[in-house]
Image (cartoon, rainbow, N blue to C red):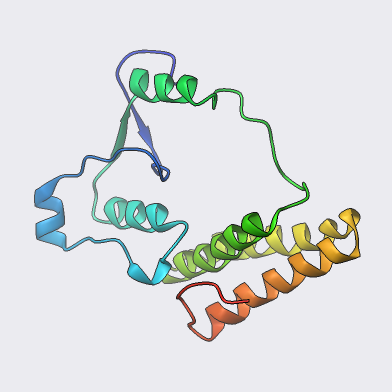
Length: 158
């Protein structure tokens, strides 16, 4: 989809990419990133706010394609269900907690359920990498759900 000219309407613009936002939109609607998210998925939250008030997210196709080529992100392999490092587990903690926070805040019930089930099943399957990996990931998943439930939205603490 990026290998042509013009702009492409997208649902969200991932972190690490450049956004140019309409200043009037920011001033008029007071749309700012949610500092509760701290790390992970804050772009999704920001983009949902933008779309909710009727704006669109557009990307320049050639620019984004060149960016993907430069960082070797054209044919990205699926990394689902691989052994995770401690750093990757912390990032996953934020993804789970923040994703569920964003979906519930925006009353996206079906997205919340699907997201929760996806990660719950993923944690159970992770036991195929050994008891320790499975226990660590299940503990991480439980902590993300617990912290969300008790509104602990700051930094991850083991």
